[in-house]
Image (cartoon, rainbow, N blue to C red; front, top):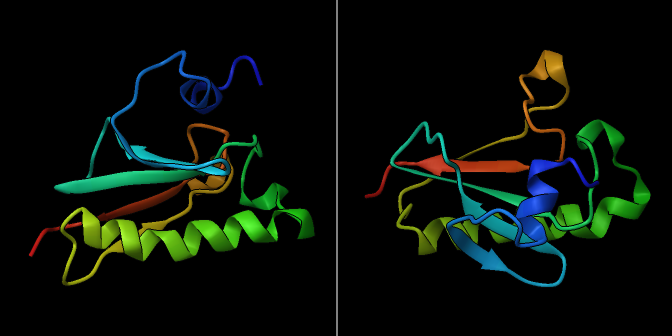
Length: 107
């Protein structure tokens, strides 16, 4: 989507502090962190929200959720972390491109 902030990050049109990238997903630090470590993992292919996912998204959703603990550990979240997926306006979603927040405190 040409007007999607996260699609522009994926395309390299907007800079981001990247944590991880492969052919399917991108992880980058949140610009408004709510914890000392706060990054997001997004699918590179646009999907509005978790509510818009179907069977065709199972592989990328699985990849995101299995990547979360690996990246959390690499970012210093040794003792645990939280994840969050805001879905829809009523769920607090502000950028309408699926993203999984990973956040916590080092130590």
